[in-house]
Image: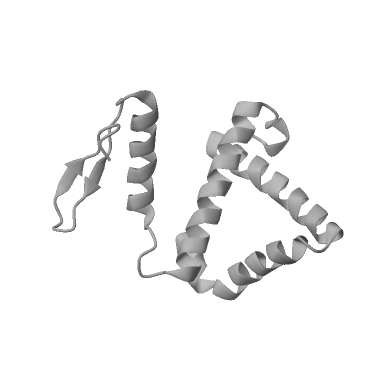
Amino acid sequence: MIASYDANRWLWLATIEAAVQAEHSPKLRELMAASLGQGRTGLAAGLLGIPEDTVVGRAELGLGSVQLALMSGVLVQWLIDPGRAPDERMIADGILGLAAHITGGAGAASAEREDGGLDEVRPGLG
């Protein structure tokens, strides 16, 4: 997905511009909201390996919503500052570190230091 941010930059920029325009166009807002719903469902279905029409539960939709939020946030970072935007490894480590923080330390992630070494990310210690 991240590779497409650079390869299809014009498409992703158009998506961001459409989101801004949706603020002024109820019809566009309605269309984009429907697309977001399909995106959440499709992402959850893909992750869980189930048909899209079976994604109905709050937890399932939550998985799709979190994936969509991550994709949107990473997209904005890549569009604005591609040289410092996170790569797949940084995102995965960040998710694991966040989960460790939320769960009180289970499955602590490691974070790469600027010198190339690894530091363990511990809950509450940043």
